[in-house]
Length: 170
Ligand SMILES: Cc1cc2nc3c(=O)[nH]c(=O)nc-3n(C[C@H](O)[C@H](O)[C@H](O)COP(=O)(O)O)c2cc1C
Image (cartoon, rainbow, N blue to C red; front, side):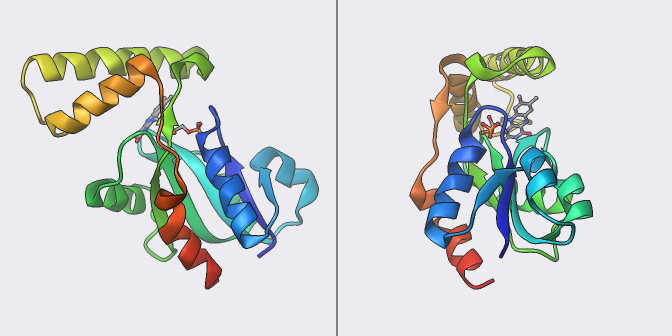
């Protein structure tokens, strides 16, 4: 494995990439830095944050490098549904792919991303108020709203464990 390449907007994916890097003894770098440091076709593990279900930077990483495993970092907790959606929406059926819960930090967001998540907070709050569970179960909606309002860091070595074990076998 040549590198762990990642895209992280507010730092949670970076934390997971650095944890994986330390465990596997493989260098971690951003997708931007990889342009100068890695040659095309290098074997990589790719990690990116999840935006509206899509793993940021994944299609670029797939074009440039030989991606051997993928981690998608979102704010929601790990559920089978989140894992399956990640695989389906990002067309990852042929690769080891892992949904990881990162966190949320409004203070580090800028521009469109910040506006979008402020709106998302209002949508989630009103769905809880109106007792609607079409978007997600109430408990998960409350957790999401809590993260949007107060910022949360859910990153942990435990959550990375399944991905780490699989990556050791690559
Ligand atoms: C515009 C936007 C869209 C997002 N969409 C999702 C999503 O679809 N699913 C999810 O679980 N988290 C979503 N999030 C939350 C981020 O994926 C989460 O905060 C992640 O941990 C950020 O990782 P980073 O710190 O590496 O940037 C979204 C955040 C933003 C700003």
